Length: 304
Ligand SMILES: [Zn+2]
Image 1 (cartoon, rainbow, N blue to C red):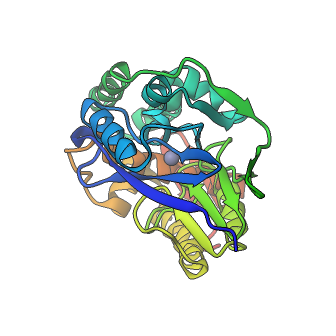
Image 2: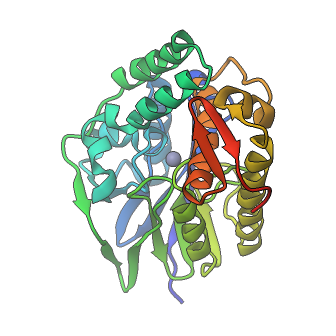
């Protein structure tokens, strides 16, 4: 029997990003020491991850494997690279964000355009953008990142492989070890699509061939039954968006009809629902269920 030590390390979100939220990172040890994802960079998190790694492994890391180009997964990678000399590996389609952290929020520009047209105040959106840029300003990018198309690492006879799981981001990958996969944000308990609907559904499908699905947030590991209920959740949300726009609605009204009023305290919790709703609307538009007329999204079919 092959034994691999998997040590979960849960890195909290700084208060501004979302109180109570966190990122699950995983330290693997067998021949090599590998950290999968690194969490958000902040003064407190640097102290926390340094102390935790020191306790379990004396600050030795050979590789930091990043599941995708979002700051809550790679923010600390640059700091840790300097502390440990680890190599940072990421899929080539998400590598730009690690070289220039502002690229990790390039999606914001597109959301901004639709949101202003859809009834949001430019000032409130600028406030969110500002908070994100300030947070990025305090982070410390890596000196070197190695992008890959496909990855295989030998851990004393067992192979760790990358598995492409696009949708959440174009370069989202899982890292597989036998029947286990570290899946980043492809499946988050209770959450829905933020990127490309079709691709996200396909990637969920791929997760179902694994027994242990180690997620990047909330419940982990997930089971195949959890993935199946997420698939249902995704489709239910799609139907809900379609029902909501029946008579024609602006983006802001669609978002508040689905999510209620957005909370003030976290900029991420303010902007993500807009982004998610937009992902669904775009899919519905492409599939001919919805048309967009100026700021109004209007359903042209009753149901899916
Ligand atoms: Zn993500």
